Length: 219
Image 1 (cartoon, helix red, strand yellow):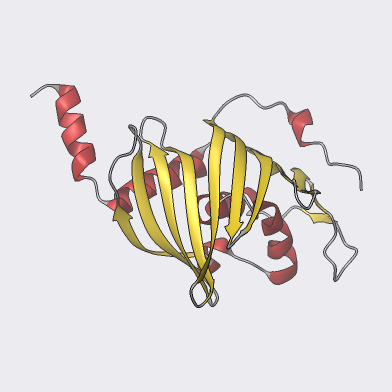
Image 2 (cartoon, rainbow, N blue to C red):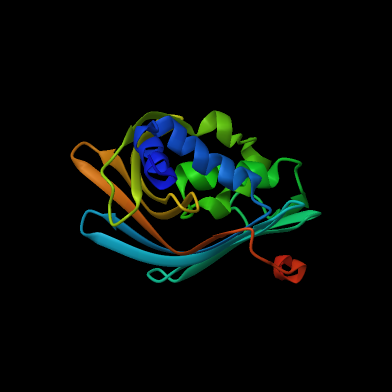
C-alpha cells in the first residue's frame, strides 16, 4: 500500500469531530491569518451583500473590516497589541477603545471558526461590554460529515448562542485546513429563515503581515 493511498484512507475514516479539531488547531496555532471575504444575506425577499477582511497576528494584533452596500455602512475592530478600537461606537455608549484583553485573538479566532466573519467585528466589543467568552457562549453540537464538493470537505453542525440556534455548513480545504465557504441558516420566525453565505477569496495562514497594517483607525 503506497503512502498516498494510506493517507487517503486515513482521511476518509476521520470523524467529523477530528476534522473540525484539525481546522480549530490550525487557526489557533497560526502566527498570522489573512482573510478576504464576501457575504450574501437573504431574509425572505430582502437581500444584502457585504465585503470585508480579517488580519490577525501574534501579539494580539488584529484588524477586522466590514462594508455593506445597501444600506451603505462600514464597521471595524482593530488592535495594535496595546489598544482595541471598535467603530462605530455602540448606541448605548460613546466608548470606542480600551486596553487589549489577554485572550483577544484567541477568542476572535474561536468566533471566526464557529460563527464566521459577518459579525466578527462585534466580538471585541461584546468581550468588553458583555463579558462574552466565545468558547462558552458559541456552542457547537451535532457535527456531521457531508459529501466532498469539488475537492473540498464539508461539515455541518448546529451552533447555539443563548436562545438562538443556527445550522451551519462549512467547506474545508484539507491541504491547508482552512475554510473556503460557509452557509448559516437561522429560523427567525416560524416558517421564516435567514441565510448568511460567506465565500473566502483569501484565507491564508502564516503569511507575512507588516505591523503597520494594524494601525488604529482614526476615531
